[in-house]
Length: 282
Ligand code: PAF
Image (cartoon, rainbow, N blue to C red; front, side, top):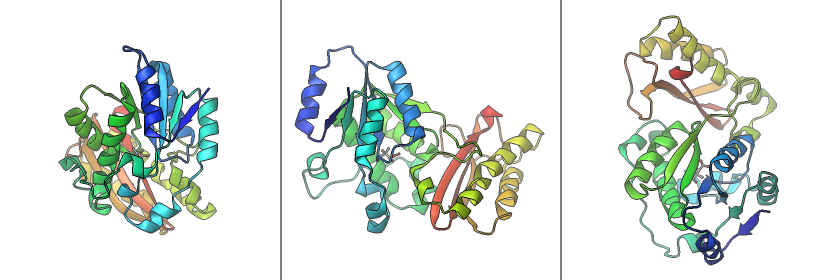
């Protein structure tokens, strides 16, 4: 049975009742749960005694009040889904409880936040590390689960957590994809039918980089050009960035090795999509 807590004290009472030595797997979310979240929940329940899912739409990580207001909120469906997935606790706190002081200091993310999503969405990662740090302090998990689809978010959270919560084990889970390769994301629901068709070109373009690398192209610039060429087939796709970075970091590489990762962000019909693929999976 899944218990829903919206209040910090009730959650803490539950948390304090868990005997020392039991493991708590934590899946932080902003709700609008989909199969990608379920795969994180499944990984947590395979590894841990209890699974806690948080649902909190974090205004601190949105660039505009409009995006924040329009973010999908589907809490009843989310809690029902969690019940079917054997989640022990859904924690859906109010902002006033998480951040009782109106004036608060945001955490400064590491320099892994400087480029890509960080420069395209100023302030985004300060908002992410601030909420994840706060949730870690309240939820007190032993393990926390994140999807590698948000590659840069994982790099930034890993750094914050190693500094501030070194006892929490960060577990990284593979990207779940639609049959045509599109990475699952809460934003996919905003794609019109036409944009949804175009979106399938993003994983196809990244796969082209992997295929070309396998056939011997090692220069980052040549592989990035190949990704651009695939995306250029559809003029409705606006590329924000395409790059190749070293695994686990945001450091760009010139010559691509098997531990490197191709990352990209595009906008289609106003919907921003990100994705990445590792050359290790080639
Ligand atoms: O990936 C997300 O859904 C969010 O960035 C997170 C980690 C829940 C923080 O709000």
